[in-house]
Length: 125
Image 1 (tube, rainbow, N blue to C red):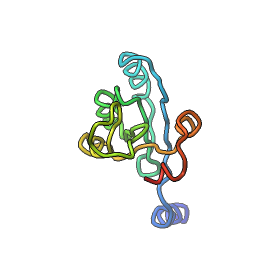
Image 2: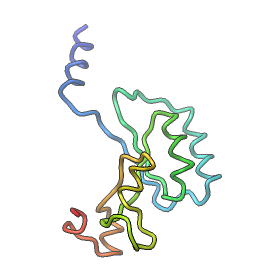
Image 3: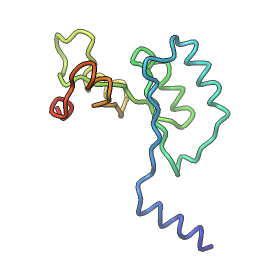
């Protein structure tokens, strides 16, 4: 019993750990994403012990998100614009993600900093 009691106390005191996976610019097709998700179906994890968040490319969000959620995982965008709606070609506004039910996004990741010069100040916007 003491082990169960300490586990219960830990759950009340500590945050649930989050495991995140950024797919970067992979897989190359929805078909390949589907194969990956199919392979994951056999894997189990305790949702009470850990949150799993996967970051597919934006083009795959509509297909991948419901499948991840069916497996108890969450879906994240890989980036979000510092602007809102407007004439910002190729950008995805936070409102777009909210409208689609995406509650997570990456910001300030290394590629955005090194290739596009994003700084802490830009990321904080």
